[in-house]
Amino acid sequence: MAIADEVQRIGAPVRRWARTQKREYTDGEPRPLGADLGAMGVYAGLVSAAAAAVRASGKELPERIPFGDAALLTVATFRLARRIAKDPVTAPVRAPFVRFEGPSGHAEVAEEVREHGGVKHAVGELLTCPFCLAQWVGTGFVFGYVAAPKATRLAALTMTMVAGSDVLQFVYDAIQNGALAPAGDDEGTAAAEAAGVDAG
Image (cartoon, rainbow, N blue to C red; front, side, top):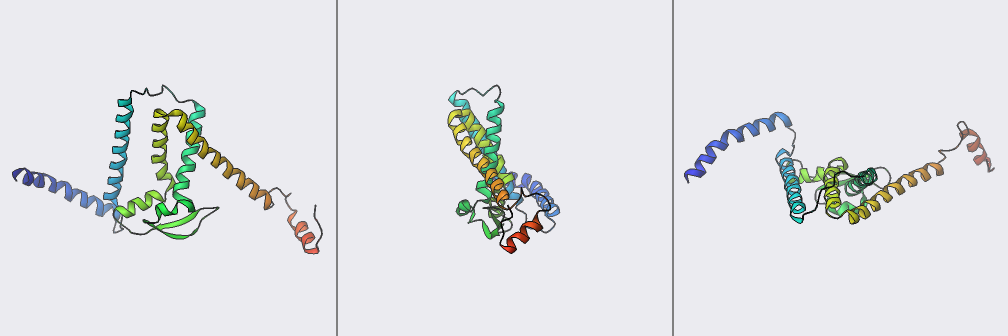
């Protein structure tokens, strides 16, 4: 019992300091600082566990990663983080934490965090932020690359191909919408279309 009392006595100033910092930082806004701290702890724990597993397996860390692999993993990280955070198909993963607001760009959705303050807020912000998710996804790819480079390259190649396909879809869409039409040709085309004449 004396130990618990001593822990309480030592911890009291720390808790007061933390409450003061939160109050001054948030300025009355419901920011989930404690939950964010928890998320950082989970991330650090997962990284530590993965590092211990790699060490126990006897796998050697690569001296360097070839540029091609680094580029492949970078594009895959971008595409997978965005897929998790913005894709309509992955909405069931985000649904417990966010509210649908409407479409946002091509084949993406806009969502708002449902609860402000606390764990659900922190998780909702993480799941709807491709920049935040990239840290987690990129870390997963790096550990995958160390543990199983061939399988990780294939997984990364899939997401990189999707990203490349997205770019081609946007280019095709732009062409369909007249992005390559000569400047100043809009009036002639519109007049020809109104008259029912083929402008080409």
